[in-house]
Image (cartoon, rainbow, N blue to C red; front, side, top):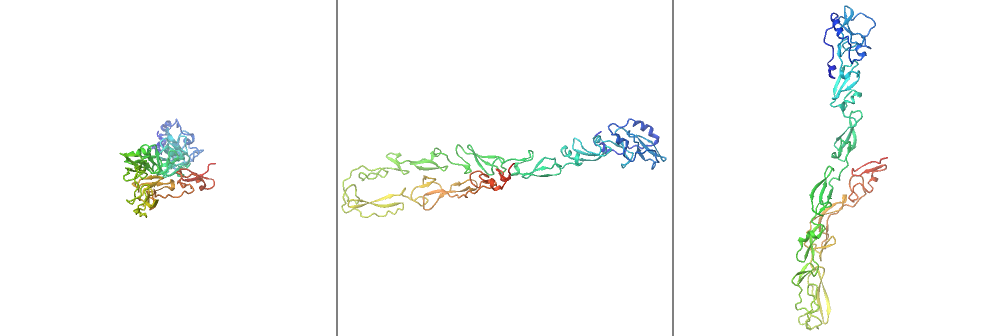
Length: 470
């Protein structure tokens, strides 16, 4: 018999009369297997009686209190023996809607009279005192049915189980009635209902990291660092969020030309002047980054050769050409004042010699204006760079809340200093919010606990305060 056969109970469907009771009583003489004596006898119901009082109406049935499922029927004002209930049936007592009728006993209710019981397939049965199914309900699963044994109804959720609603981790209450808040997670992706916990972020959202030569960035869900690109040896820059052009001078060798050598400055390839005196073809040597050919024509000993050296020729004393050479005396045709050459980056200085003033232009650094409008070579990060260096290139300063971006440009005009135009914020005391206020590259440290108040601490990586464990 299946667990639900009892639900199809009711009367046995046969019409009991005194004329047929002998055969029926013989069939039920063996009693009921597995049915409690209290049920088959009708004990405790109004059907039990001490003597044979007059019966109420012809055809009425009642149970005989012998525990065997026997019954009596009203005939001619007297109770006479009627067909007994068959095996697997129970006689309904006077307190039921159909006194004396035979009801099928549900297998699932045998031994669970008056209780709620679950089968193995998630159905909840409510058994009455006669082991008959009074009500049944499909809970959907055995887990949702088990709590009903006590409460008498299916649970709405499995007690102790978790679920995620957005980033909120929720837990089913002990009665299986409803889910309630458990722990708020950093985001929905970090809410782990199966494990019943909030997973810690693997990284900060938007964080850039170099793993060897590979540039990686934290995904929006903060569950992993995602590969962006492979930069090559030493060329990964998490600070610049990109692969840089160089990490050493050797990677810029292709920029070398004449008296300019390839150099790596600020992770960018540029050129710097070759050392003075380096041969650059024939008798020419490098001088201030340019190839210079010595010139001693019409120059006497001690005079500059134009390339950092002096001339050795010995010249006769003369001054008729207006230039005092060597130790010659002035013949009256020598200049007496020094004219301005019109170059802002040179200065006119007199040098006294016998009988005359020799004019000489002293070069201030390069002697020409640079792209920032100043005199002399450009400087960047403490290094000399050529006037051809590119401006407007991306640059950045600071970390955390102090991080800012800009471009490489002249710091002043006129001037000769290049720098990054970025102006980051100043460091501030840390507070527990997941950000890096003190700009040291790590969020929620160096005093973030103090912002949470007494008895609290900052849950690093979560950006929230929590009680200090006892």
